Image 1 (cartoon, rainbow, N blue to C red):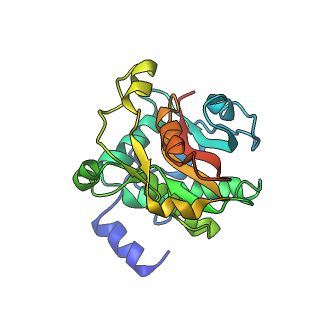
Image 2 (image 1 turned 135 degrees about the horizontal axis):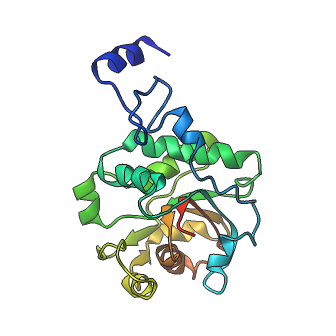
Length: 229
């Protein structure tokens, strides 16, 4: 704990998103007690785990992993809401670091060449001020040293929110949502880790991978903070 954290903790106290308890200097978003009670997936790192099967027949994935299970109205839903809409930039990066810590010992990043966060539309980025998936990826990059690539894919339109869409609606909503940029050519023969905040049907991640699918020798893995199994 440093002096700056001591001072800011006195004048600008932070509170746990779950229980409301005042947070210590080293705690972000949730206190240690609430963090330990979150629904961790404990997914094994393999190309045929339960989450990876969501992408079978859509695009090949080397590995897929989510740190937490998502349920509507649950603690993870509240965490994601704050990350998206309440300007919790530091929390996004901290969650990225937590994901990286969980996966490093399992060798998840051993062959990954680039981290590629799912991009936001320009209008939504201006409105929100940041891309939560990019901040998650930056947290991973800080822990792993893997370079971040944010200019290989662009979002060509601001699709309607996916929150209340049916599964069919989600797939229809993302058709042609992303296009590869000239920078994507540098991904030839590379292993790319797609990073997003939550996996539901997988439609957005599949659309992002589709935009890069013509690049020779490219391979994909997927990591998200949460999975709505």
